Length: 367
Image 1 (tube, rainbow, N blue to C red):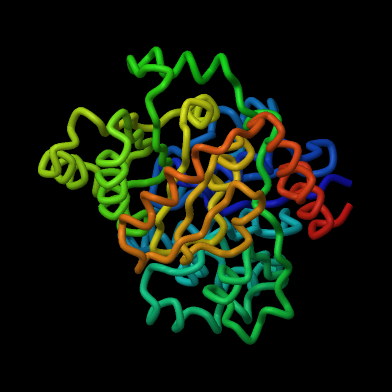
Image 2: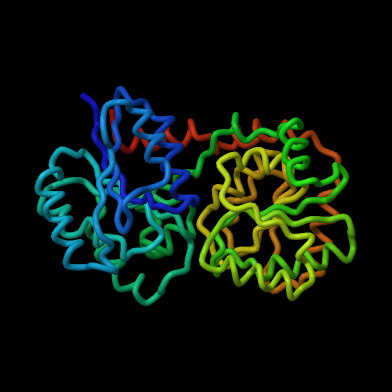
């Protein structure tokens, strides 16, 4: 008999959690498992058309107001939704980085007797006080606890719960994220970038978490030492305009390229020469795994889980290191001669392919 699973975690913004949910859906066995999606605070979501097309049997999305913006309307909508649909699901799978998201499942999980899987995808951020207040409710409500890393587990469930949490890798589609020489040329031609220009790449939402200001300082130092360099930034977000102003003030307008949101990120990785991610906090960033799969020399802040060091191309640096140390490390380690096509195989071997991840999730769901 087919398992029915309700997933909460998709939004109308492209991000790592959204990509993870989409990948695990499209690589699932749809004859055994079928997902629906409850989306709060939006009237549409990323991957909506792709997922409906994948199933080809009707609509799989439900939309409710945000609890933060319209708490009474939200609770009424949740009560109505779960009263009508709650008992048809084998699991409700909450994919989140904040304990406050439990408001979308509690106390309904007890009223309508569905098993709650809570899946932590972030290692910090949001309000630590609010996170602590909601943590006991998360732990009481969750039948199954999952996390992408130990840090993500500690953040959402608390350090004393680690022995009750299953760590599941953020797997990726390694066939898609394999270095492609033709794609490298295509992207560089599109932006009129020479083949010998050194491209520093970053993919991430323009938010405080991603630390773009520090990234700009690193790039400016790289530019001093390696004049023929460009910085490509993919993503959107609330701090984008602020970062653009900072670029102008730093006289980097001609060397920093704002690419926006892109669905063909695999081609951009191929165009990059290095990938830099100085985040203030993370769980286990999907983009960091994708970049390694593409054979890119990667440079991560020590605030990111050590699990991110999957290949010999991953370098970890403290955020309290000055920008000169970051720049020197990036230039030195990006000059190695390697076969970039071989790294997708290494990622798969280490258990970070999407097929391995889906297999682990299906063990949780049962046959």
